[in-house]
Structure formats: C-alpha cells, structure tokens
Image 1 (cartoon, rainbow, N blue to C red):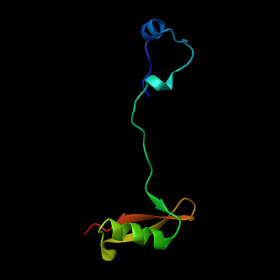
Image 2: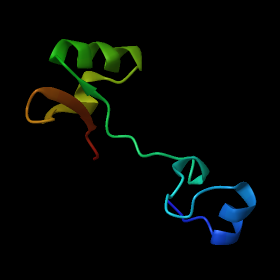
Image 3: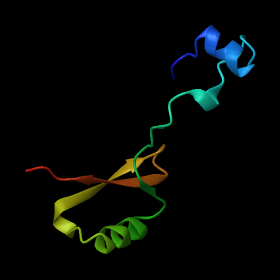
Length: 73
C-alpha cells in the first residue's frame, strides 16, 4: 500500500502517525478457491463445464481442504 504525503494528510485533516488504509490501493489479493470436500470440488467444476480429466484436486490449507489445479498439456 502506498503512503500518503504529509501535505495531503494536512489538507485532509488526518494524523501524521497513521497510514490510513482507506486511501491506499483498492485491490486486494485473494487466495485460490478451496473446498471442504472432494464432492463439492467436483460439483463446482461440473457447474463451470470443466471436464473431469482436465483437472486434479490438490490438498490445501494444512490438508483440510482441496483446491482445483488445471492440467497443462
């Protein structure tokens, strides 16, 4: 997240000691889509028209969840 210049902080009436997250970048990073069960992952993939042979399930989050990884030829 980028810093706000002191002149801008004075103009907006903000404290100089805080970073003021509201004025930073708007994008946030998201992790991969994970599923609690293998059945839920397969059901999501069929809903997205992904064939069963084109992906595989990989354990994620301390082997308590599964994520879908596409097979790249």
